[in-house]
Length: 195
Ligand code: AMP
Image (cartoon, rainbow, N blue to C red; front, side, top):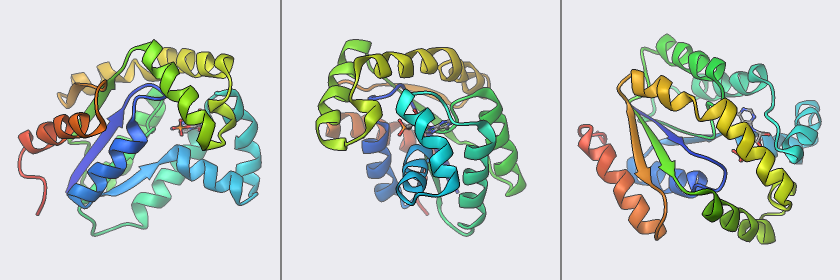
């Protein structure tokens, strides 16, 4: 199996690239943001609880997202692997993911960290806000809050994966196809991932 983690700040291109990578390598794409938005759209209790936090750019509790990931991993046995997008976002989530994967004799093979500067991130988020309908894409203060949450809670995970020897940083600025090719090269360099 091949288990990838796509890491980066809001607007780095994680969702776009994760879909392309999932298709190319035959992986299951798991985005906690998408799973949470589906709960919101479905009007579930979980969705109702998550919505106000998401709209403000604040993280949903670790228990909720880890529970969703657990369900996804358990319901997708005998797959080629997973690509995680927007998860983990905190150290407890990263540790929980390692434990969940270990239960299936799996681990994270590569963490691909997309690097994009703050000005470009804001430009992308405001452009996306015109069509995404996402409340958290609409407003500069919410963007700044998401960046602050990313910098304090999520960015430190780079050290966690660096210490595991699986971190690769990628320049996330440029054409979508060019960034995609850089990501694919790193995945292929790690060994032949597609069986
Ligand atoms: P995203 O689509 O990844 O930008 O996520 C949108 C929002 O969903 C975030 O700002 C959080 O409120 C929530 N969310 C998504 N993934 C997570 C996660 N792994 N942990 C906590 N909250 C999350």
